[in-house]
Amino acid sequence: MDKQELVNRTARNAVRRHVTGLAVGAIREYWENEGFAAVPDLPAQDTSVRRATFDSYAAAVDWTDHRHVERALRVFESLLRRIHRDSGDDLALSFDEVRDALVRDGYELDQNLRIRARHLAHLQSRIEDLSDPSGIQAELERIRRSVAEHPDDAIGAAKQLIEATAKIVLKERGEPVNDHDDLADLVKRSQQSLLLHPRQSPSLNDPDAASAVKRILGGLSSIALGVTELRNQYGSGHGRLSAPTGLSPRHARLAVNAASTWCEVMLETLADPSAPWRSASAGV
Image (cartoon, rainbow, N blue to C red; front, side):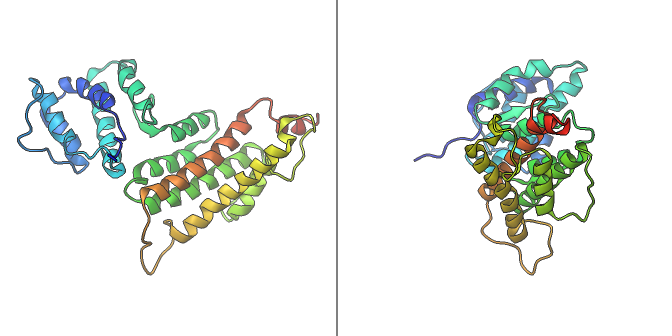
């Protein structure tokens, strides 16, 4: 069975149509910055030299390979940001065709012209109203840069994403946090602060008290601790006698998707005006 392309041709062509305003040298530079070399003597599919140049590099991408695609998406980001910058106008809306096409493959082009996996993009939207989202933002950027080519770094960043989220939740709830807190304790305390720990009992009339929700919340705690154990065994952040073997991008995505699930539930509950922790805090 043929492998499925990870970025559809419609999305690639949507980006391609925008490059006609760029210098040929700039198009080459962005592709070559990510390690791609043009395919020589590629039959021209277009009279535009700029689009033909784009095609010669895009033909070198294995669109079924996650590592290739992560690098190619960074090229797309650079091209779109350069086009936007050179225009001198707010062209974000003019990229709607690119944005819509990327959604089909599970990616999202945000207002800063960053391309993210949609699960992480949803998490990104949750941090905008935090008093200081910089800790979470830093780990999201590390994940984006490393998930395809450096899975151990991505696993390490996934663990640190959980830690940063737990600390921010506790800070927003006015509870003490310090740099020496154990992650298991941070996870437990942060879930307790939002009445998301499975042993807590919100009002019996509240869906959060349902036994099914309790089972899910128990799994939520296990997710956070499982990512930590995976990081301790395989992730970055420790000096090792030898590098871990057998890691692939799918292991990184497992850790990242698990971590982002935990973080999104925490941040969504923190922001929910009707969440049970609010009425409990008010003494209702």
